[in-house]
Every structure is written in structure tokens, then in C-alpha cells.
Length: 337
Ligand code: PEP
Ligand code: MN
Image (cartoon, rainbow, N blue to C red):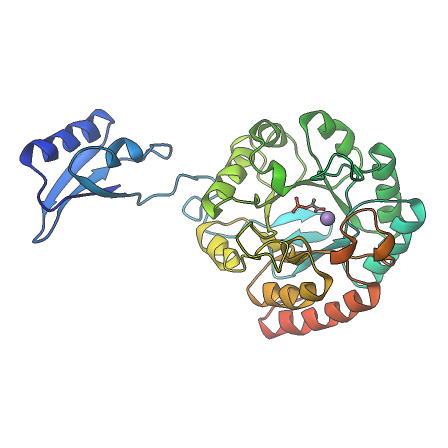
């Protein structure tokens, strides 16, 4: 940690800062520059609250030089984590598609869409059976019936399943049907859920919270890793900003930032990020170009009658065309899709 003091900090203030730092267990090193006095605080304390120092008299700024996340960080593991499920690898050279409707709605619907997903070359079928809806009056998902239909449709077309878990009590049930657990944006900081998911042996995809910084998101991943589950996948799905021409603001820059700071795979979800069908293909193409390890895309053959997120669902024809475009982009950057 680096502590920068005011230009005219008094000797007593400097001594007080040093006394506090040493009290917290840091070794200190003072350097007096032409313009500033800098105290280097040496010691690894990932959960030290820097405000303890920044509020002291005479202090201008405090900077961390280490990250508060440890297991999720590149410093901890230099090579990329590759999450393997049967013959699918997430975080390797292949860009992995997770496609399907927002929700499982009926047997006809999920089988119809699973067929399209398989024909597109995607390996993972996405759909929710437990839905986190902003309104309690909106469709809440089919529950276990939805999980059964989702598993059956995926098995029929040799696909893996990803579906959302919203609370601890659902883990055992969902575990019987899914290959990957999805933690939704609204649950990114449901720490009790994250702790439970740290104890299981299936991969967890954790979406970025609606107003979460990348550091907070990586700290949530850290909860799962700290519990012993190493198979964590991050998913950028847009954050809340003042912009309202899009449902959320797609933070594409999170992709290279995460790749630099963490060894975990990161995929992108342009469907929830933009919320409008027309905006999904351009942002999907951009995400692959930016280095996403995979994409989550919502599709529907009859979006007007969809029970959730119809306006952002791609029609099968648009989705299949997009897949061809994405393959070209992946190839241009030396990847496959
Ligand atoms: C979803 O994937 O359908 C979903 C609810 O996503 P998010 O948590 O990103 O809103
Ligand atoms: Mn959705």
C-alpha cells in the first residue's frame, strides 16, 4: 500500500500515520520527495480497509498495490483456468456458445429451440426454470417441471444445460438436472448462496451484478473459489448507467480487464446487456472480437408470445446468421467457434 501525505503534513501527523500502519502490522518505509511525502506500507493484508488510513490527518491518498482477491487473481495462477464439462472446454481456444430461451415455457418450446441450438453448433442449452423477475406478478418460471423439460430437451440433442439458481434451498434439486449453475446478476452478492456453491463440484457461472465494479464481481467469484470450487466462469451482462436507449450498458472493456486481472474464463451476454433484439448481433460480434471465451444468447421462435424477455430474443434465422459471422470473427483472432 502506498500512502501519500499532504505537502505540508506536520511531523506529528507523519508519525501518527506510521504509528497506525505499524499498529495494523505493516512495515513502513518513508520517502521524502520534492513535492510529497510518501509512506510505503509493506505487508499482505487482502482485506485491509484503506479508509482506516485515508481518514487520518495529513493523508492525501492511499493506493493498494495488491488486489483484494487472491484465488481469482492472475498473480495466484498465471495460466488460464479451463472449465471442462464432458467434451466442452470453457476458457480454452474455442469460443463456447450458451444459447436458448430466457425461460423454459413448454415441452414444445424447449424441444424446438434445443434443436436449433444443436443445429447451430452450440454445445450448451440455456433456459431458466426459476426466474428472478423485477415484478412479483411476472412469470416466475416452471420450477422443477421446467428443469425436467430442459434436461430432456438437452439430452435429446446432446447438449449441456445451464440454468439459474436463486437460493440455497434450490441447489440440490437443480443439481439433479443441470451441468452448470448460473448465478444471476441480482444474486451476485448473495454471499450465503456463493458459499454453498463453493462446496459443490459443478461449474458456476457468475454474472456481473447490476451495479457491481469488476473488483466486487471478482470478490464474489472469490467466495466460490475460497469454498473449494475452482470451476468458476464470469459473465458480463451489462451494468446500470444513466443511459436508457439500452436496457443496460454493455461493459465490453470488462473482457480485457478480467483477462488481465484474473485467470478465470469470461463470457458475455449481449442479450441482457442491450435488451433489444436489433442490438444483440452487433454486440455479440464485438464481444467475440474483444476476447470473450463464450457468449450467452437468448433466442425464441415466437418471441411475441415469450413469457419473459421476448423483445431481446433473436429469431432462429437471425441467430443462425450471427453464428456464421461469429465464426469468421473468431477465426480472424485465431480462435474457433
Ligand atoms: C437470465 O439469464 O435470464 C437472467 C435473468 O439474467 P441476468 O441475471 O443477467 O438478468
Ligand atoms: Mn432473460
